[in-house]
Image 1: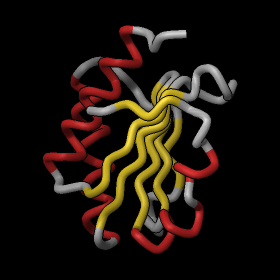
Image 2: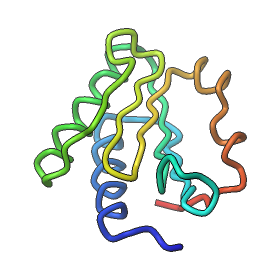
Image 3: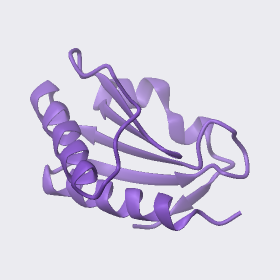
Length: 116
């Protein structure tokens, strides 16, 4: 199953916003064939709490401007792992230690990794 046009737009806008805030190691995984929780994951790392919060704020602002409202934001205050849900795309913004510990890329290795 191919990603919807809406999911592709969310990914494109979100990845651009994360890049603008100097997010590192941005990874997009199409999980539509292996999971019912979402169609895609966007995973990115930041160097510290302030940067991760800025990445979250920028993605949320840019996606909101495009008409996509989030349905949840979790972990913003601590910012070791911020999760933001937009329709069928979930953004995971990590500090480096948490990203390595949870290793979502390994958990979803059967998904299709998308080059952005």
